[in-house]
Length: 166
Image (cartoon, rainbow, N blue to C red; front, side, top):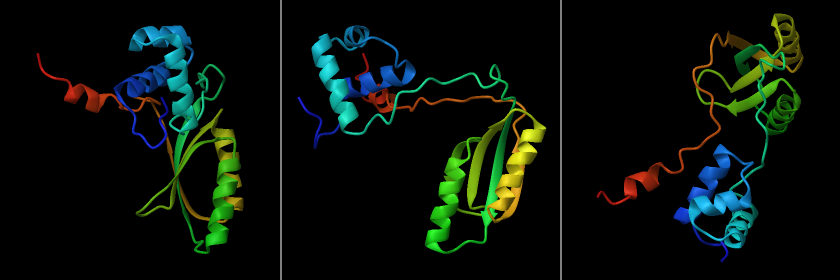
């Protein structure tokens, strides 16, 4: 079975949901959970990966245990309007190791950066780096407490709603 030119079926969605919650599970454990043979499960996972539904497998580190105690959200505005200059700026933002996420926005600001630093001094140094990139305006908000942080997409929500009621 291939997934090319075909939407994902319920088993594929289950596999993706299992993997996004714990990518370290063995193929045989995933197979048990979706009631398939290990070879069939392996083939499905390879097809799912081949078709771009999985970007990468990573370990999510504990930032505080590693000394990165200051999480910040930084809104930035630019005065750049030339396409090439915007691409150059975005490449420079992507290259900054402190940047965990960078989003292009509509509204008052052009970008939102989620960054992590070890302390206020490192944050100040990061803001200096931004200033050297020609940023017109910066607004920084420090995260006092993280209420929820997730990498899990709600892909099984539709499946739950479509199940017949007993």
